[in-house]
Image (cartoon, rainbow over the protein chains, first blue to last red):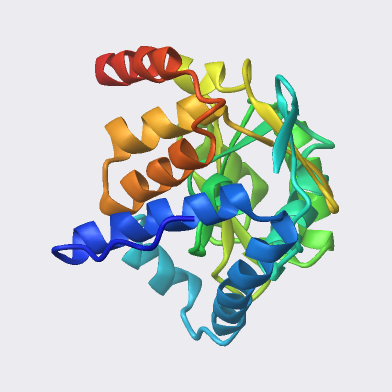
Amino acid sequence: MKYLKPGKDNKEERMNFVEYWAEYVRTHPDKDWSRQQNVLINSLMQNAKNSKLTKEEYLRIKGEIK
Amino acid sequence: MEFINKNTIKLDKEINELDKFVFKFIRFLEKYTDYVVISGYVSILLGRSRSTEDIDVFIKEIDFEAFSRFYDELKGNGYWCLNAEEAHEIYNYLSQGLAARFALENETIPNFEVKFAKKPLDKASFEDRIIVATQLGNVYISSLERQIAFKKYYLKSDKDIEDAEHIESLFKDNIDKEKINKYKKLLVMQ
């Protein structure tokens, strides 16, 4: 696998990482990449459980109610 | 992950909490109507290194009675709707082409953003939807080419372009670039 190329700015850095990670996912077993991905997703799901946002506040943020 | 036939991807990933949330809801939904999961969760299911607060789903239009039964089953299993409480009010939103969001009761995120497929392009996403087969069962997602075109040429935020790039890089040997261009033209015309 190629090394991750540093980007000239944040946008390019992010896109380089997206390409690097896609190549990692493509070339590694599902169990390997998903174990890493799940650390991120499960922690965010735990944060969501602790969210104090009401449904009205949430829909206002989404621009779906005034 | 691999295509095991023209329209099925086999995925042997470890299941996370978001997957459990999605598949549980889908098992209720599919009793009442056809569906196709679109947008962010598709990229995440296929390995993108991010999460999401809402899972976008198109469903085929159903009548009020079927919707009421679906909604009753959701409520009986600990869900609520963020937009309204009464079934007729939620159904009215859906009928107008608006989204209804469903989450676990007393929670807001994550939630399912459900819409009736009303526009021709939305309806067409059922014709070439693909199956992702996981340990938790199957889920229908929009075709990879539709997903890429929609994110890259219609939504166009940084996050959406990155999602499209992830899928395009991941399935570089399977993607039909002509199809992406065809959908791009249709999206521009829409």
